[in-house]
Length: 396
Image (cartoon, rainbow, N blue to C red; front, side, top):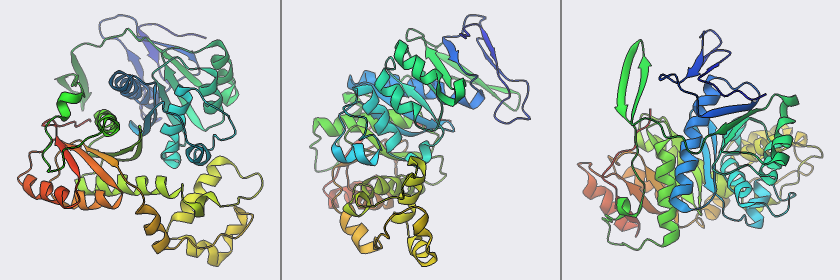
């Protein structure tokens, strides 16, 4: 079944009571998408179209295949297709799949950064979906995927997912939207120019700290952070390391709360790589999602309660030792050269202080706060590098 027309009727809108619901082209033209399988819903399409824009820009900025894992119109993860280390392959549960294609590596990274948030995601791929990527997707809990195409083997694998009901969308790579975009809220139409800002070297040229050394890898990570923020519900902050977002804080009213939320996710990503976590022995037959939950509990403060109740026996074959706060802090102190992007200026230096705890070395933010001098001073204290972009990246 292929649906390609000027209108697609949806089951309902954001919620079951919101009917009727559809997507369509106001000019009467054909939609730039084909539904190859399944019946995507309203939120599925919101995630798909935001995710597609994100991965398209990531590939344009880096030259590498890109993938995003979207949930509720914000990315849970985004990454480019760099090879996986043995440790990353293990913590992303793909070490049994052998050598993966660059696109599959991109999705493994995008989903693996925050696997709990990615549970039931909508996937966006910059390139034609290949068999490696499809095999990875097939075994994860996901609502659907959007890509510019699918190899025959990949399409066959994906169409077998969810008993044949998996949502598969093909996007027209040549589609260019109008320069003006509109939406309605409470019956009132809003209109604005599309955010076509190019995230490039020139945008990151204004380095305001004493340390002005930005290696190419960090410059690429700055671009990944800012492009990710362009499609993340604001306020938002993104931590990036080695070509992938490792912590995204979205939709918070306070900037420092974004920084804390994203920082905690980045910390969890790094703690998964610790000897304590890599040494966990799970109960036989425990699925990937249950292992993710077990690890999250293990590195959380509540694990003492789990030990006290004897609940560990449901998920672990052997009783793990407590991962003490001191041990976690000692491991996190090894995390270095992390990049942070913020979609608006830091109003206080507390954001820098929190970022430092998660190994942040490079920061990209608009600047323009009345306290910029204090923020810069805090960066200099930790020998960080900070670039002022001069441009806000709010997304709503």
